[in-house]
Length: 222
Image: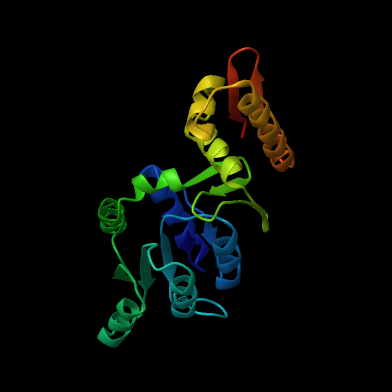
């Protein structure tokens, strides 16, 4: 997430991040950023401090009240030592003063990614069309709506997400999720697949396909 009210700088940041294979969402104010943060998943936040309405300091206080681990980078024209120290006291991972060199910022971002092991966190959250699966919270999120999942629903959907676009054989799914492969477990799995389809039906691009005689495949046409 990039929070920057200077639209030209925000677009430039987004372009540089894309060039380094980072997908990003650009917000121009804290209210928008808060709404997205509460309903979507982000690996890092880059935020200005001097923003319209609520400032970046207050936004990071909010973020830290929810998540103590997500890396945060401040971008700011506030270069006084007291400002920088305060930023780090709030839990920032880095503080970059404006004007800054874009290449240097990208190197700092990449260093944080490596240090935080962000690539390894993907197993805990998945984007499925317009849905976001949070395996830690046992829920799916979509446009502010939360769908709580049972343990079996979560395990089955997690397995399908890990193999997105590929067929998961029925015996494999039964062994992993139900620890047994028999007629009753197979019928039970069919019921759970039906439940997941009902939850995912609001996004026509997402589907759990039944590959006859083989297994199931989760597809996302987005």
